[in-house]
Length: 346
Image (cartoon, rainbow, N blue to C red; front, side, top):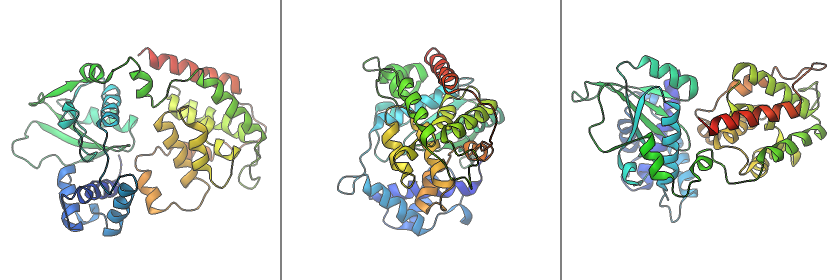
């Protein structure tokens, strides 16, 4: 389970949005209100510093027009639908203003999950969303049926309420939310974070094959060949998570930024992989670039990486051998194709 200290950047993000919206004027009041909104009991260790909130506020303003956050409810609803699908063992609904398609701060995504016990939900969620955080839910006597509240970080924070009762307000289950969002029949591609392409796997294969020409620093990589290293990492990930297409894709493509520049890999990676991979895949790769072999990440970078899966970083150190056999690139691409086909028909 994620350490409670990981709640700090979430409170900072929430407090920054309250300040940006003009709903709070004081940094201390903003972070206390943010903690209440997120369901966190007051604790000095949970509270971010003024500097952390200011950094989060600056990022919001950089993405806004005239310092007013521009919030599109659709990507928030898409993220909610992805999470509902990942929680298929339980009945889960979207509640709150997003049901009416309303978003003001980017913090309105709330899901209600019906379960008599929270432990199975926690185990499932932590296995599939390692960045999830359990917070206290026992703040109101009127919520005796409530089993807990979790926060799931991502592009937007999702609050997941686990309760033994049905939601007592307007709510949409996964099928209803899918119907609301599927405007032109292209929802599945949008859910994956992809734009319509021809055969994206041919492009992925070409990019990966180009890594054969990239030579890595012998001091860190005795295998030197970036493609050989990528295939080793692909095999390592396949042993741990053979059905995680996004994780396997990240393993295969994590060094593609080196095709353009070894020094500005993150920016080049985004350019090369635009519309080819999902948001999560790109996030995993960025996490490796930011806190892998390079210098220590900045506060901004650490905040951006809340919830990032560290499995790739751990396995990357083991995928640096010489003289071993690996899956071929063609075989790796076929594995990704088959997983993609399976996901399309779930």
